[in-house]
Amino acid sequence: MAEKQKLNPFQIAQQQLDRAAEVMKLDPGIHAILREPMRELHVSIPVRMDDGTIRVFKGFRVQYNDARGPCKGGIRFHPEETIDTVRALAAWMTWKTALMDLPLGGGKGGIICNPKEMSMGELERLSRGYVDQVGRILGPEKDIPAPDVYTNPQVMAWMADEYAKLRGYYVPGVVTGKPLPIGGSEGRDSATAKGAFYTIREAAKKLKLSLHNATFAVQGYGNAGRFIARFLHDAGAKLVAVSDSRGGIINRAGLDPQAVEKHKRETGSVVDFPGATSISNPELLELDVDILCPAALENQITGENAGRIQAKIVAELANGPTTPQADLILHERGVFVIPDFLCNAGGVTVSYFEWVQNLSNFYWDLSHVQALLDKTMTQSFWEVERAADKYRVDPRTAAYVVAVSRVAEAIRLRGIA
Ligand code: GLU
Image (cartoon, rainbow, N blue to C red; front, side, top):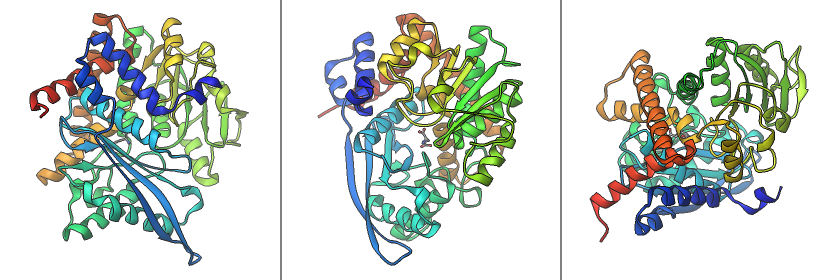
C-alpha cells in the first residue's frame, strides 16, 4: 500500500493541520508553532524480568502544546510504537482537548513493549520504571497521563503510586483513568464509548437514520470497542461483525455484545465465537452496514479501500484510523465521518472531570458525569457541524478549524517573547 508506506502518522497529523490552516487563514507564525511538539522526552527503562535477566525498554513522552493548560493524554504499550506515532497522538490530544473546550493541552506517551508476552509483575515494574524516568515532567499542573492502547486502570494505579514515592505523598490528580477506590471517576471506564455514542446519536439525527435496527460493525474489541457495541445494541442497533487483533466474526442475524465479550475474556479473542462465521479485519471494514466503528489502531481506512466502504457513518473511536487520501474519497462519496478527536473525546472529557474531582477532593455520581459528558459532546458535535457549513469542508477539517482557532487564540493572548 503506497500511501501507507509514504505517510507516517505524524506527517498525516501535520497535513491535516496544514489543510485547516489554509482554510482558516491561520497566521503563518502560529502555524509553524503548531506543526511541531513543544517538548519530548526519550527514556530507557531497565526492567528485571521474571527469569532474572534485565531488559531495557524504550519509552517516550511528548508534550505537544500547553497553551490552554497542562498537557493531557494517554500512554500506550505497543510493540510497534514509534516516536512519530506518539507525536501524532500528542498533536491529536491538543486538538481534542481544545475542541471539547477543556482547559488542557495535549500530550502522549508510549513504551515499545509487548504487554501480551509480559507477566503482571513485569508490567508493574515497567510502569513504575517509566514514571521514575518521566515523573520529572509529570504533575497535575504539568502533564497528566491516562490509559490508552494496552494500558488500563491497574497500570494507572501503579504509576500514581510510583509518582507518590517521588513526591513523598499521594497526588491523585497526576494521572486519570485510575480505579475508583484511589480517586478514579464514575463513568471513566466506558467514557470513550459513551461519548462516541452521543456523537453517533447526533450524526444519526442529522442523517435522519434511526438507530433502532441500524446495523453496525466494530473493529477492535478493547475498552472502546466493547462498550460501543453495548451502547449501540442497547439503543436497538444490530451488531453484525466485530474483530480484534487476531481476526473477526460475522453473523448477519446479530451478535450479542456481552456474550462476545465473555467469549473474549475466556479465550483471549472474539475469534471462534459460536454461531458466527470468520471474517478478516479488512473485510469487516467493507461490510454493508449503516455504522462502522473503527476502534483499533491508526491507518485502517486508506486510499486503497476507502472507495469500498459502504457504511453511512464512520465513527472513529480509534485515533487516526483514516488517512488523508481516504478522507477525501469518503467525503466525495458522502460517507459521514465523525472524526477521531470529536468521536473519541469522551475519554479525555471524563478524565478532565476526574482531575477536577481530584483537585477539589469532592466526588460526583454517575448521573452527573454522564449528563455533563452528553452536554459537552453534543455541543462540540454541533460546533463542528456549524464550522463545516460555514467553511464548506469535511467534518475533520471543520473540527480542526474549531480546535486550532482556540489554541491559536491562547498562544496569541499569552504572547511569544
Ligand atoms: N487515551 C485517551 C485518548 O486518546 C484518553 C486520554 C486522557 O484521558 O487523557 O483520548
